[in-house]
Image 1: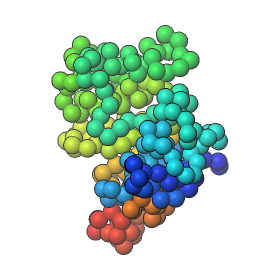
Image 2: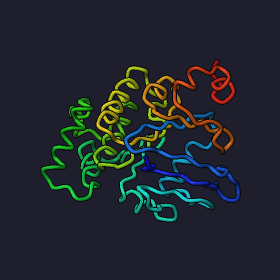
Image 3: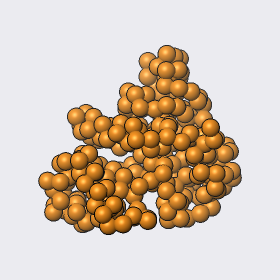
Image 4: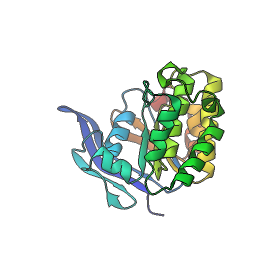
Length: 240
């Protein structure tokens, strides 16, 4: 099966500092792919290169067989690739209702009734937001802000959803709620690329794992291979 998202020998970095070195990975349609590795391994840089917020120096990135590297982040988003960035991704000065409306309006080709149904759906996923529709987003708790960030991403009707450390700094009960929503999206067949600090959640939901180290891919395999190898988890993930 051809990859829906493909990174082919990509090199990039910041300023004159090379961070990713000839990175290649493939994301099959309808799969959940986890990018794992220690801090500084290049996981977030990979997501930034894919989303167009960081230029690709060498190599090629394609979505549904069409090259997206070299295009603007706006153009890439219009093609159906959505990133939930590390550290939330909301408009803190707007209320929850306005943030959700921005997400709903970002979905191209949908009529008003379809947008309304999508809004109802995300409020079913995150009922706490329904209680806070008129509250300014910047005054929400960290978990509620992450729910809002995910809601806005879901409303954009992405073809591929990338999530960068959505659990960071949150209580375990909130993390469990967030990943319940990820499970729902996986069951619906959405293609997901996941960077996650909690190895347990990443291995629970992923179909395929890429372990990165020092800006390169060090291991590719199914979650069971990582779970069954103390040497791999100790060497690359600091676990064991």
